[in-house]
Length: 349
Image (cartoon, rainbow, N blue to C red; front, side, top):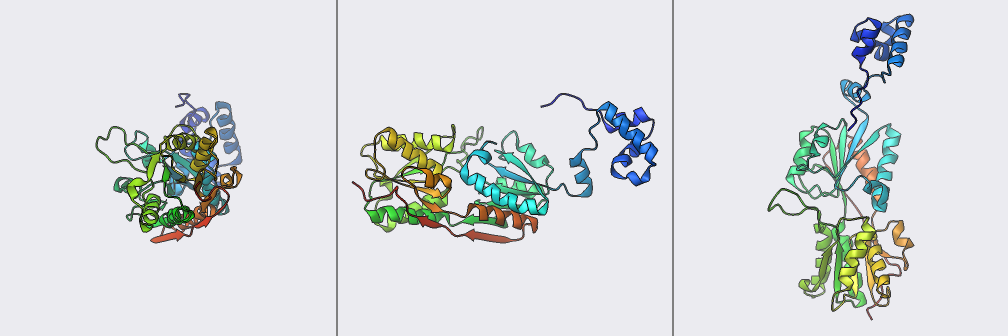
């Protein structure tokens, strides 16, 4: 935190010999002062290094800040480095730019974290939640702000305004594709598990993306295969998602018998699995098939190009932004997904 003390409005008032209200009027209601007096006040402010009224406080007095908060359960860097997140934020920005609205990033702020006060105190006009907002405590924290909010990809029905995709249908189609090719030894590269530190016995959240895991299980059981034969490995949270995918892919590929196909819950994880296969001289797709989820630019850039589930990430951001600007009405929007078959899948060896 900054410790430097900046000059205040009161300091300027003392220097000029006027009231604080008069100094405030010099910035906010200049028509109330003579030009000579206003020039004296602004000159004194410049000499003292007074930066002017706090724009957040000014916005709160107007009842609007012109800023929207984006809440997510990842480090700050996630929104700049994860391709899926970048596309989603692009959609948000397109709409907010047109509306003259700014965006404040509120990373990794769960209600039981020490930084949760930031969520309670952030000077914003509304909130977009881009995380697993599936528990009542999380939604209660949003409701307590008495601000409009939209949840994206969250599972709680307590959120009246929600935007999502057919996660279950997407992974069902991806897994069915692998089974149709003849694969029977399947594995899942799942998202990292988020722990609630200091909350003994509390279940983990955001670990396996229940709908996506459910779609995989649907396809497996529909094919008459035993669910307990599927290897499910969760990535860790160190480094980038691709690096985590490489590590979780290594654990999957070092098993015996080795799975012949991997369903990854994002393209970044899938790309990491392909990296792990290359490390072990395992040919994709001749010896191992890999499917991702998202259809980000990563999917087209892997070698071989990645079979994946396409989701409209930019449209998802645009939809969430428009709903928030409309006051977050009671609405549930589910956007379609589509399996895109490329070169990373083939019949098993």
